[in-house]
Image 1 (cartoon, one colour):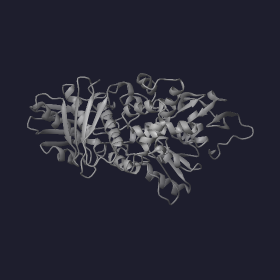
Image 2 (cartoon, rainbow, N blue to C red; image 1 turned 90 degrees about the vertical axis):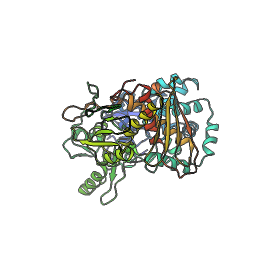
Image 3 (cartoon, helix red, strand yellow; image 1 turned 120 degrees about the vertical axis):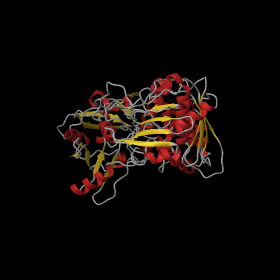
Image 4 (tube, one colour; image 1 turned 90 degrees about the horizontal axis):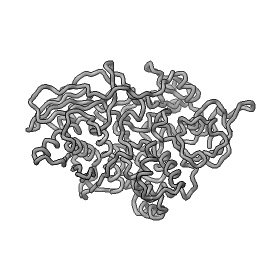
Length: 536
């Protein structure tokens, strides 16, 4: 435990006494939240900040006298004298139980949200909840968001851990080569990624966790520059940070379909990648900045991020290490979105796709659907990027695979081949089960591949049914809270059945093809309504 510089209480200061992960501590009673005390005062990084602080993502969940609590909106003085336990402070057997179960089931990918989820589930386990009580687990997870896993594998990990089968989980994990599993994770995330117990427990190398404790802190000042302070609280106060809000209007597609005699039309809205680890970096003077991709690809949302260049420039300017951090609101305003489209396609696969002007997206569409004429349109709105998951080519694939399914007699089965050759087929059954077959070369690790495919199905379901941002006529985003993005909750997820087709081809990404195929199958099952999101 590291007491951060200039935050140790003075001899005459009012203090709060706590027991944190088994250690008695005194911290200044300065109005901080419990999360700020843990991360900024004590240097405990197991609790994560995903919403800055909105009390909506669950990443900062800890146990207070054994009961789960969201730390970012809990004033520290309210828990004075209490016992605080983060995932780092769980007993060795319990930490091993959860880490083994999550690794064995593929229930953690980037690992940012899982420490909070583990604390929540440990609280549930301590109450004696039955291992097969999935409804109780879903209710508990209502306080959390996970963008990676699609929830199903988390429920499976709960069943393993709550049954006391940690030895079984450890055996399952031990039979796997986690270096090979990490190779598969890297292919699916489009960036190097690790699989293992440290990742599950939140130690995946996130930039904001590794910054020097005496670093200056910089946050966007709202005018294109950076507010710098000795502490995060000081920097945010200098920036005039305004807490996030949820818009009062529904998302509306910004583009209209061109006139034509179309077999199918599709309009999509602005969509937030919604990665939970907000952009962060830090740098020493004259050094190389820490990258914002600690253990995951952020679905393409951090391919270009302002934080690394800012960390380098500010460190050199101030002659000290500088930690640069975006809040959730900053990420929504500054981070790239999925470019909206408005398309019409004829029965022969020709047509027109209008798309918000985005470098590279027209090429992505043409590569998948050469029969589509691409019209790029300038629209006031947030930044967009062709690097966001399957941008352009997924929309084209949805249209073409839906056409093919309709030609086959109204089937709800859709098949998509990705630009690099992976093939996914998805269907939605009368039982609402989503079934996915995927072939993407050498499997490497089926647990990881299955996890990423389930996560892709979760994202596709949200994209089609519920996700979108309200953007006003001036291009300003009105939805600045994580709960306003429309991410599908655990309780609302159907069962996903995944069949991996073995192949001796070289291993390639498979979950992006699954993402497009599931989106197409869901659209077909709902009758191909012309605008997304279509509603649940």
